[in-house]
Amino acid sequence: MLAELLGPLIRSRRLQAGQGWEALPRPLDDPSVQIGGADPERVLLFGSGPAAGWGVTTHDRGLPGHLARRRAQHTGRGCEVDVIAVPILPIGGAATAVRDARLWRYDVIAVTWGLSDALALTPVAEWGRTMAGLLAFLHSSSGPTSRIIVAGIQPVRSVPLFDARWAVLPERHVGRLNTATRGLCAGLPRVTYVDPPPLPRAGPGPTVAPAVYEDWARTVSDAIAS
Image (cartoon, rainbow, N blue to C red; front, side, top):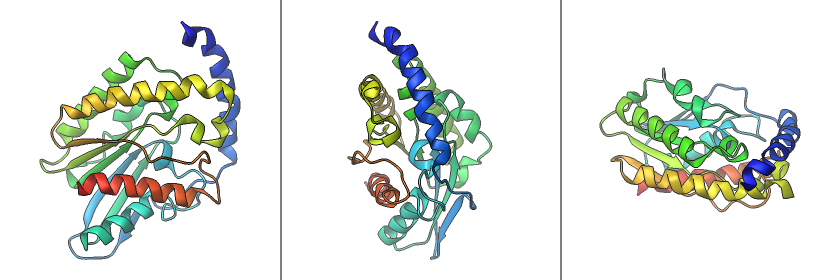
């Protein structure tokens, strides 16, 4: 009931705040980062939020670069991280965005999705159905030994543009969506859910973003290593 009453206000505030995204830099270079070495591990980073690289100008300084370096350091091998980033899109469009990616090529598929759905207050049942379909597609289209890492949604108010009183309800909704995702992942082989890193209340910006992406890389890499 509260969501229905506040929904129009939240949508209005979200659209106003979201216009600020256009002023933030984003990587425009080749969506791939490679660390030289033998028998490279191949990783696909897929999603919105941290995958999009808000606040940095190259993928090397964003999550892909940090993840590639951390994985190479951990394995002693090379690492290639490809990126399919959809900056602002609800999960309903996720499967279409990755449908032609030849997922069987990757050792690891790392998924970061959901901030737009938290802001839109996507119903938990709808989120669960769509996420289940996405996971089934990733599972059936990837290789028999591919690992799928699904990261939870970051706190809404960790992004400065959305750090406002109106975002309290979407912030709570993140917990509901993450709980649903955790339950779905628990029932699938080769799929691992990982909580997002404990981000500071300072989202992607030209000065703080590299440290934020380093935290994300550590979280995803540790989940792969486990």
